[in-house]
Image (cartoon, rainbow, N blue to C red; front, side):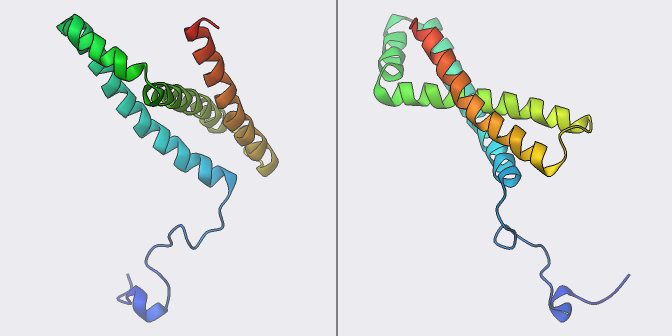
Length: 132
């Protein structure tokens, strides 16, 4: 084991994001983590909805007024999109775990497919839920 510290070698201890050139796979990996956190916040909203339904009509009407507003609808679409993206990207990672789609061209193709398909699937889910 060497006693040299990183400052004497002139190398950074740990490279960070500004060292690397951004790539699609890097962005989708970060987005996968962010959507995972978004799903946790959405679970809090679902818990609020269930508690409002259990508590009584006034609490449920208050929740319904917020959820029915423009902000509430945008939050709902964002949560559904986060779910569809996280789900599809999770399937993509499972395929990678099997040793397939690891070539650069296939990784980019599956990445763009997951990104755009998540918006299409989220819109379809919202349309189906709204009865359109």
